[in-house]
Each structure stands twice: as C-alpha cells, then as structure tokens.
Image (cartoon, rainbow, N blue to C red; front, side, top):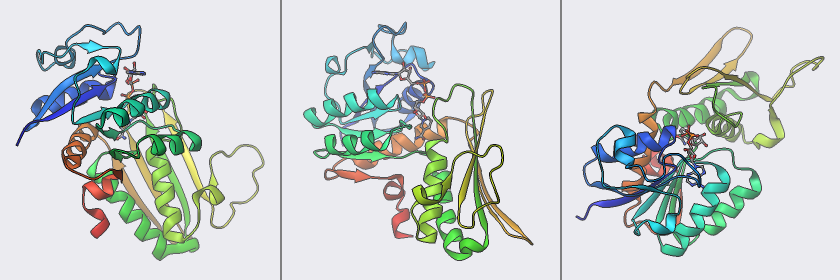
Length: 270
Ligand code: NAD
C-alpha cells in the first residue's frame, strides 16, 4: 500500500513538533507538508530538524495551498486557523484529524458544515486512556445517578488558553449523558462568594493552570459514605500525537463523515 501522506499545520507548536516526530517514527506514514502562521520565526525551517528528528525534506510554509495535496491534514492549532484549514481540506478532498480545542458552538457548527464532503476525526483528547475514561464515566454516572455529587477537575500547563479543557467538557458530556441530561443545563463552571448550597444534579468544574503540566483529569462521584474517582494523567504529549496518527491511518478509505476516537478505537461496539 502507498504511504499515507500527511500535512501537519502548526508544525512548530508543542503538538506540531510532536506530530512531526511521531510521523517520522510511524511505519507507512510520510510527512508531505508543514505550515505555520504568517510571520512565524520558523517559516523556511525543515519541519523534521525543528522537531529534532533530522531533515525530512519538508520546509515550513505559511500557506497550506503551497503544500502538495496529501491524504490527511492533522491540525492542532487554534479555532480560527482550523476553520480556514478545513475550507482548504474540503475543497481539495483531503481528510482531517482535528485536535484543536476551544471552539464555541457557532464555530463548531460551521466546522462540521465545511467538512461535510470529507472524512474527519475530531477529538478533544487523542489518548486511548482518556477515551476509555469517557466510557467508564458514562457507565459510572448511569449507575450512580444523582445520589452521588459529580465534580470534574482538570490541570494543564501555564500556556493553555482555553478553560475548562476540551477533555474536561467531554468528560462532563459523558457524565451528563449517563444521567440522561444535557451538560449545558447542569454545568457549574465557577463558584465565588455566597454560592448557596450545592444543587442536586449539578456537575461542577475546577481548573488548575501552571508550570508544564501536560494534562490531568479527574471525575469524582461523591456520596456521604464513599467517593469514587476516575483519574487520568498524561505523562507525555506523545500520547496525543500517537492517537492522532492512528486516527489519520484509520481514515484511509473512509466515507465522508464526522468520526470520533470512539469510532477509531472501536469503543462504540464495547
Ligand atoms: P501551541 O500554541 O504550542 O501550538 C499551536 C501552533 O499553531 C502554534 O505554533 C501557532 O503558531 C500555530 N498556528 C496558529 N495559527 C496558525 C495558522 N493559521 N496556520 C498554521 N499554524 C498556525 O499549542 P499546543 O499546546 O500545541 O496546542 C494546540 C491546540 O491543540 C490547542 O487547542 C490545544 O488545546 C489542543 N490540544 C489537543 C489535544 C488533543 O488530544 N485533542 C492535546 C494537546 C493539545
């Protein structure tokens, strides 16, 4: 089978570099293009050298149109940038793997519209552990119901710009789904001052930002006599890059559609 050609957009970012490295190590995959935002100091640099894996023969450019067509674009950048990349992917028939978080509801609707003609995987978190955690949380909340107060905790590095994390929101949606309610109706994102007692059925979020924490998430089910915690710690960004490259490989030959890591990992059938 031909190698899978992959373009990494945002190639000098924390995840971009990790993706370039992971693609270099992955059998059957080849980096065919790399982009960065206009004005980036890394334009013109070899993406492989920047990622510390030696020359890949792919220079970083500021316009996706300058990259030869590939099978898949992997995008861990920012919402506005991802929307522009999606237009390009749809018009040139390239599949997309999206890791960017922080979209508002309108942007997300627009993204899905743009990408109707191509197969797309989007996940707030590409680690196998977190995706399994979502299943466990859904199951736990359907069993425990409102008798257990549900709280979600997350911690990330000091450079993260959105909060709560896309993963914490995904955990919240899984938890709400398990109880048969909509997250928007029960989420509590901030507590300050005289808040009153905790409302039964609410789902609270708390957020820590600091240092170089790669990503920690905890779902807590708290009753009077016991507490169940489902906890995940990412120890290396490579876990997200590996998941994203796995998703890119899975997309080969798929029909246009909107897929999740649940589909990629076959968890829908569990
Ligand atoms: P980062 O700031 O280190 O990297 C983002 C890169 O995108 C930067 O280098 C930036 O210059 C570049 N960029 C911005 N606009 C661009 C454009 N128009 N064209 C090309 N490049 C552009 O951030 P990061 O830590 O790598 O995270 C990036 C995104 O991925 C965030 O939304 C983060 O929350 C998300 N993320 C998701 C997962 C997951 O598993 N889904 C894991 C980690 C991070």
